[in-house]
Amino acid sequence: LRQGDAAKGISAAAHVAAVTFGLDPRGLLPVARSHAELITGGLAIFLEANIAADTSLLSTIPTGSFVGIVLTMLPWLLSGGALHLHHGFDPDTFATQCRSLKDGVVVLPQALLSPLATAALPPDEIQSIIALWRAPERLALAKPWEGATPVVDVTSFGEIGLVAARRGADGLPVPLTHGVSSAPRQTAGAITVIETARSASGTLALRGPTVPRHAFPPGAERGQDPHLAPDPAGYVDTGFACRIERAAETLTVTAPPSGTIAIGGYRFLQSEVDALIAQID
Image 1 (cartoon, one colour):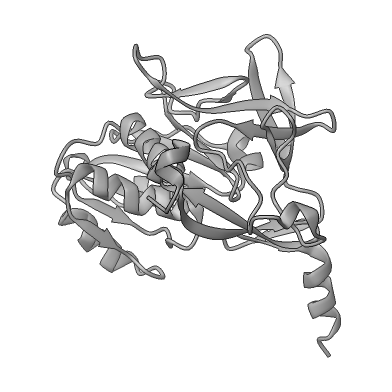
Image 2 (image 1 turned 180 degrees about the vertical axis):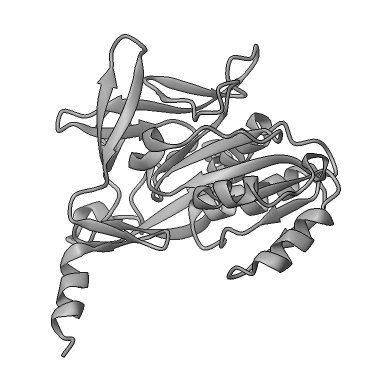
């Protein structure tokens, strides 16, 4: 504990553990994460994917973001198994790594689900697949998964938060819940992970134990630089447009944050991309 924190009742778990960078319409947005937020995010994945003790994990996701840390580092630490990393992408090497897992878990971008289904890997070599969606607006367009291996979809909303949900018998991703999401879902004693709401401007807002609560660095809210700005109720606006499906009490993400463009799993300001292209002869 830092000096004086014990007397104030501040737990070491509330200290900043990592700082990652998201994208705000004004530019890069620093986001601080506590130990507790990282652990809760990792535990949500761990529980929803039903990862067993000593399970080997193969991840293709870089660890330079909140979702990268939570999908790669935390399940490995919670399970106590071996961590295998795959950089770039080489199909043959990836297939060899999958076959060496021996009932392990594979973490990959959702775009690799279809190729993996046709790769003829025996299902008993993979315990489960965790598919990362960096573009939540594409979730509603997903095709059914017909493989034997269970799939857990992780929908990422930049550096603000994520939602994990295991696919059902129809093989389709589970829609986002409007309200409280727990892990593992529909299970007695499940932990609350995140709460969703639609803002007055029609965008998705998040709050809960995995969502950052404070601007960084301390005092940034008094300056002009981009910073995290929760509303009075604790919700943080993700910028993703959404609509509420009233009958099912679910949310559908319809568009990415205004003024941004996604390239290779990363988001950039459209204005900056246009400026770079304009310089090309």
